[in-house]
Image 1 (cartoon, rainbow, N blue to C red):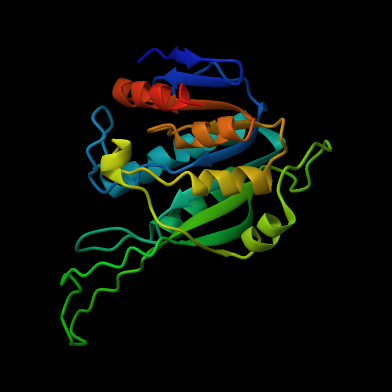
Image 2: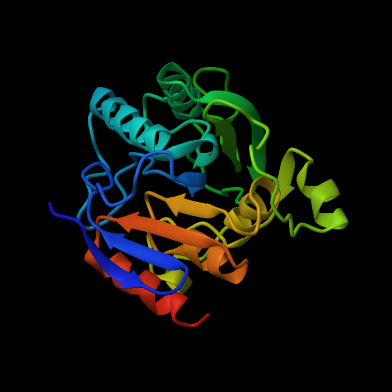
Length: 251
């Protein structure tokens, strides 16, 4: 599909289309990528298939991570919100697999933040209940894997707008805050604005360019706008481009 600009203001651009096919963003342009890619758990995203064969999913993962690598500056950074594992029946080590693919492409590993969203299920779907036969472990946490392109230290000195309290708290690798309401946002898999807000303030300067290649409801762009960063978002669903635009117009 051809990509097109769906919304634009002084500091924000929403691109409607497939991030793998977009050529509007030049290589070596992005300072920080904050995104949560599809988890391949059969979410209804409308125009995107979230139920691929696992090998296909890993090929898709390689494609978007390579694209992000090309778009990033040499000191560009990547914050990926990904699950530890997924699957019904056969469990998949998604977090480890995505991280390994990124490293093979050339992304350098820096750290992992554990996001404790506190969503502990009361479901009885825990395998063989009270038996060692086949128990199923449910982890109420997700990962935010932090990587960089070729160098961790930023080349140019800019203005940091993070407070002392925020810096001390957020450099602790366990972040605890609740998830976002699907009904409230109108998207099947939204993350709360606190997640991109922390990543943006901790890992970028005030004049940096932020990208979310899986923009969804536009949360990363909203956080960027609130924090006075330039940002770009790419989204394959027209409905979610519209949703993101409506959210951005409120700020």
